[in-house]
Image 1 (cartoon, rainbow, N blue to C red):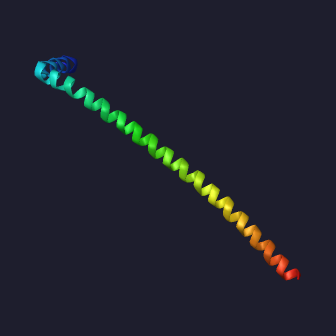
Image 2: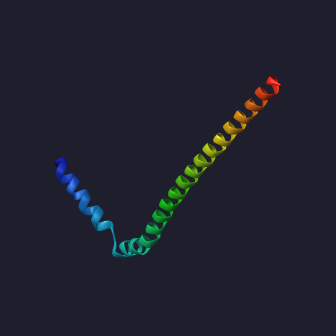
Image 3: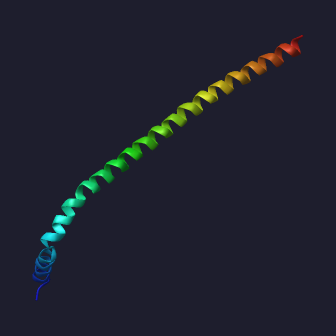
Length: 82
């Protein structure tokens, strides 16, 4: 027997094994799968948004710290000059 004939026979047997009952159950579970995929997409988007917000907050705090550092340096320089 050739390999292609064996593959075709196995494919036919696999298709024959899928009963209408299994197909019906798969169709009933499809909305659940779609909802799960949608929720995963939303969760990834929310996590990405949270990361972006953390980066923006960190940059803002860094600028604030740099300004405070500059004010402190100026205050020290003024104290030394007097």
